[in-house]
Amino acid sequence: MRLPMVAVLAGSLLLAASEAWTILFPVQHEWTAEKASRLIALSNHATDLKQKLVAADARPSMHAGENPAELLQRFREVDAEYNQLYRQHKAASQPPSPAPPLLRWIAIAFIFVGAIAVFVRRAARVSRPIA
Image 1 (cartoon, rainbow, N blue to C red):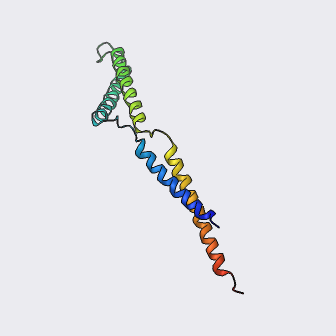
Image 2 (image 1 turned 90 degrees about the vertical axis):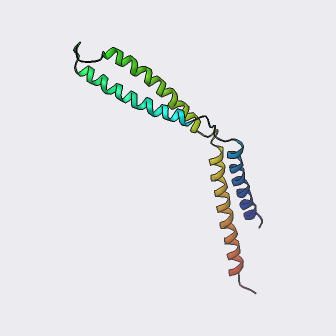
Image 3 (image 1 turned 90 degrees about the horizontal axis):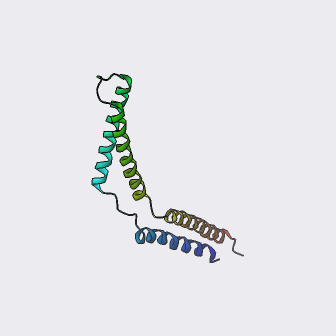
C-alpha cells in the first residue's frame, strides 16, 4: 500500500538530486564573448580565403591575382585556429556528465508511475461496494 507513495517520494528526491547536480557541477564557463567574436571572424576569413582560392585555381595564370599556394597556406592556418576554437566551444558547452538528464527522466518516470498507482488504488477503494 505504501509502494506508490514511496515511488513518488523517490522520484521527487531524484528530481531534486538532478537539480542539485547541475548546481554543484556547473558547465565550465570558459567560453567568452571575445572567443565567440574571434570564432565568427575566423569563419568569415576562412570563407573569404576559400573563395579567393577557388577563384585563383580557376585562373592559374601568374598575373591572375594572389598565389594559390600562399592562399592555401593562409587558409590552413585560419582553419586550424578555427577548428581549435570550435573544439573549445563544444567542450565548454557540454555538461560535465549525462547524469542530470538521466536522473531527471528516471525521476519523472517514478513520479508518473507512483501517481498512477495512487490514483488506481484510490479509485479501487471508492468503487468497492459497501457490504
